[in-house]
Length: 472
Image 1: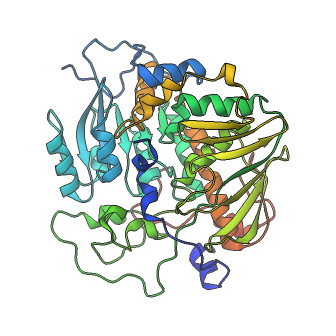
Image 2: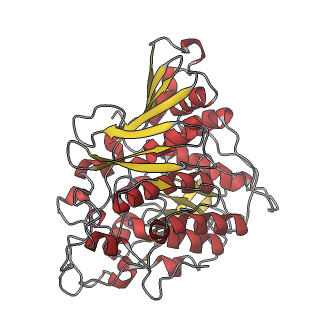
Image 3: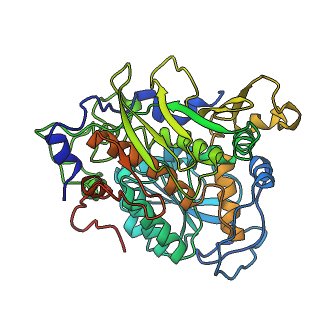
């Protein structure tokens, strides 16, 4: 099977595929500044408050079928494990909504899990391998905030164990993982929320539904940021020493090829180390699947294409900072162009897109939008005060998690259901593959195949290390 490495060796993958820009992974940078419940218990009591309640009034997801709903007691909480206790996981853990209780902190770097556990109230276990934690019988849900290449593996195992999950973006490391996640969630009747929290923000929901419902007229073109793909590892690989005590290196490497330990690899970009894991293709798809997931999610939502995807993609050449550009087209003729530079100062929306309609142009960004003409649809616009609940440290995802907790109790599908997240993640992989093969590709979103390109088809999956095969 041809791999990305084979294509990179043949010289067809542009060397301009750049790593994450350091500020991009800090999501907060984009904001204005009792009784135990078994994991198989479900209920109808709503915990929707604040942002989640308003969001639910705008959009009612379909139910999760096949479950016998039970009621939660007044003092019962959803018992959660945090899998991945770095910057993102710790940030979410310290701002969990009421109605939940974190009982387990899990990280291959045990010190990170221990540090988080010490900051939390109650008894919190510390573990270094999520496979063991997912065997617990007292968990209702898990938040998966690991390195990108572990998201799908942990998510499938959680569904198989009867545990609901909240999975940070990028949802998947490669395409085939996404369909496996959807299949597992449906087979085991699990509630899976993907961490593209703009789906729960009132301003984003209004703007996207305005476009989707024809409010700005016929849309032919959408423009968004040209997010980069990850870099291939250097030809010589990465050397290093044996991991120190307290680091489960085998669990950290997981499905990736085994490498010698190096401390910069386990770092976060905020540590200022240039070779952190988010740089390399062995552990991430890159920013096109990271922060780019938020922008692509708004495109899918606004175009009403949550259950499908593009039908054609093509390379356009490098942009002004050397990132290969890719444009794509949907079956209805709408073109999406990756045109804005992924650098400061930003021109255009960081986490959305510019939609040009026959009646109006609208720019959708995180927790805000603007129209041209400026007063377009002003009478129907939501109260600007609704945006404030999403502002400030720790609040940028809280309402989205709260919405997930309600979905766990009511057994309905959440705002960013796993199928929606998979379709968004698919586009990031299609862009990445188009960059790799550097030619026009036809995609069949119904069968989810490249019908005329066997080489591109092989890139929909990747080899996995023995013992870390994707659960079936």
